[in-house]
Amino acid sequence: MDEGWEEVVDLAGAGVDVDPRSITRPHDSLLTYYILVSAATLVAFPFVFIPAYIRFKTLRYRFDDEGVSMSWGLLFHKEVYLTYRRLQDIHVTRNLVERWMGLAKVPIQTASGTSGATMTIVGIRHPEPLRDFLYERMRGARAESAGEGPGPADEDEVVTLLRQIRDALRAARLDREQQA
Amino acid sequence: MSRRSEQATAWVYRGIWKVLSDWFRVPGHPPTLPVADGEFLLSFHPSRRYLSYLKLFFWIACVGVDIAILVGWIAVFAANPPLGLVLAVPALAVALLPDIVAYVAIHLRYDTMWYVMTDRSLRCRRGIWTILEHTITFENVQNVHVLRGPVQYLFGISTIVIETAGAAEGHEQNAFAVGNKAIMEGIDNPEEIRRVILERVRRSKSAGLGDERSASAPASPGWIPQQLRALRQVLEAVRALG
Image 1 (tube, rainbow over the protein chains, first blue to last red):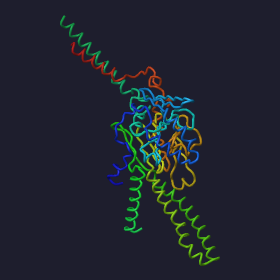
Image 2 (tube, one colour):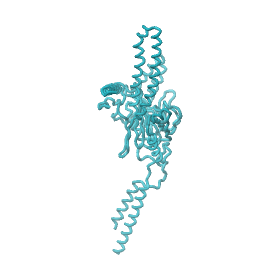
Image 3 (cartoon, rainbow over the protein chains, first blue to last red):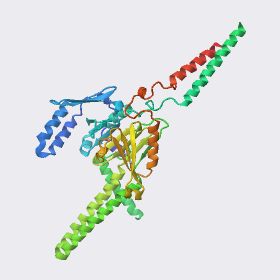
Image 4 (tube, each protein chain N blue to C red):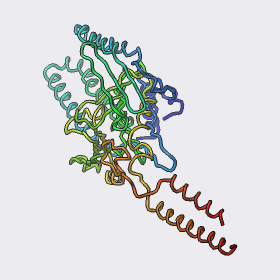
């Protein structure tokens, strides 16, 4: 591992600060990618490309405070919504062509029993900020999530404090009685 | 291997890596995970023994294919010596080139496999053509399997499969791309890793199904820091009275 490689291997986006909440559409280069993929199927080009084109044109994302929604389809409309808290697995996959174009797929999973991803976020130009955004909102990624309730040490401290308050009150009362 | 040839090998390998990272955009650095202060972050490759394990299969396949090519060539040479001589160079190339490519590929495969563990989560990354990355938090873990076959036993390595809810049997190949299980291959201390993960799972009070905090810890008898702070303030106020 040499120094200097990191810059080269910047994977078209690491270090670029993009707020994932501003993502509403897949990046335009996704269409180029679909054209390339469809072209690779030769004669099947129209059959592969037309659904992909419709999908690209109708794809919408909405990242809100609680979850993410993804919708697509013209005749058969489909919308998937999932909450960040229910996220279990975040994948990032990039094949060679996608890497050359700076694209990535982010398949994310909840506990549903499907073998595929619950939602595959496609056409993402900078997957790292999005991945970190999702990760931070996942359960267990930060200390305040469930499982780290108050411990016995806290209760000891509470008892000590209450005793000190009691003693201080008694002392204050004694003072008053002596003054009176 | 002499020092000089070792250096040459390392140089060639670095060259291959440079091509991979420049043209094929394979990241040469390990993945990272955000960590809070005082938490550990481990980033590691599979065990070196996993490399030997991969190489064993490589040598078996390599010897098998090369013997087949050699036998074929001897048959041609016996039947028709001039043709055999003409075919000697192509046969040698067909025998050796895939071996070299496969050998380098094994090293690259090994070097692109990364596991990053923190107190809270695990991230695995692997792949050269398609780079696959998988992140899970231990809070969501349901089961941890340690798998070990006879050959893996000889090498003292195991595969750890960490499942979150919804993981299905099968889909092993697909699991890295999409799926509810993280697979760590070539681990030589599976007990240690399983202990760390299960300890974390045990400490968690939820079922690992996305329960909100309020649902998982209802009306906890403990005290939250704000209450403690208020109590201290009460104490100060009372003391000021006296």
